[in-house]
Image (cartoon, rainbow, N blue to C red):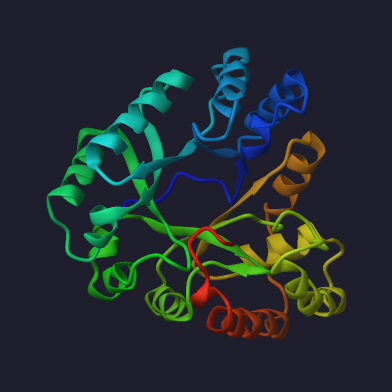
Length: 290
């Protein structure tokens, strides 16, 4: 592992691709995040996000943030192509962090590296990519757990990255336990889970269970509660949250500067819920149903 060049709060750029928001407003949001020195998380899949970011960077190339890019899927050539495409889109010489979104045989190879994984490692050796993180879902293959247990994960990636907030923990209990026991670094995505009080789907009953815990805590807002939860976990190195509001970007940056961990009993109560949800729901979820 080489370590990750990330800020504690990483600006997620999904909202920058939303054409329902005026283009100039999205550029202003990206510019504010860059001026605050935040790292960015982005992808060519996010609509116009790369175009918006390119415009923001061109306004001040002296304040270029560090980037995490999503790259995938099933072959090294496909992944290399996505690396080169996204770097060209932003006129960048190298990718600071590549988020490996693996599929097919390449995902199964994580625990016992073969030619495919060795091809990915060559991108790091060449200096094309500085570091890798491994995206994980409840339906990720058992090879990911085995890779943590046998040490192969540490040779390939500097962290696991997955949804992690009071309402979501997108690794199953056995992988969570292995990551905790080995103190493997984690990048927590979706800081506030889209906001408080989800109105539908599996998240609504989860909010009902977490709301009394949140209200009994000393947090003054849901964003504060979520930032303190994620960054209070010992092996979480950063949390990734998306917004198009410069004011909310500033709030996240401020909250992440020196967050006070939540009370241990609050965290334990959340983790008890996570464990239950993992066994009762997440383990049985169909791919991409959550």
